[in-house]
Length: 239
Image (cartoon, rainbow, N blue to C red):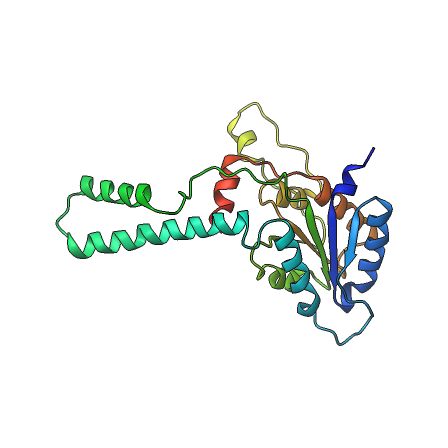
């Protein structure tokens, strides 16, 4: 039987600061059955620049997970287009009908949204199940790498450079008086990036984490599904 890992493609990229960790993770992932492609750096060079490797990796992940001009792009365009239509309609209402009463103004806004060629930003969009392409990018801190990756349309890169404990219960737990706070561990930030944000790229800070923590973070990232909760799909559709 084919393993779940065999259905997941992982693209790796790093600069010189993440080169050793990238090599280790490549071996680790291949041994785990993942389809892995190393997008550089292919040789160690202290003078290389991370955008040269990170951006092509992020663009590849975005394109193959349907984010570049596909589902994510269409949802983002719809959200932006709908918002711009509302703003444009509002300007016309204010400029041409300053005397309009509040009830009619609300009606005009609703008509603008109803008649727009773009889907409403509140439309629920299923995600996650088809996004079986991920990127693991690595640098000294992971911060600059994530910034570069997130310039690629459809890329959603989250940073991990060490443990961070959840300090408050999730909203659902907080709303229930008898509910206790969920157990927390240093990798909650990685889980939440997948569950809430449908992150498709994990950016690691090689100078801040051990090999063991990197392996665990990557495993959690690849195995944690997106929640598909309506509030999260709605928010993601807006960008």
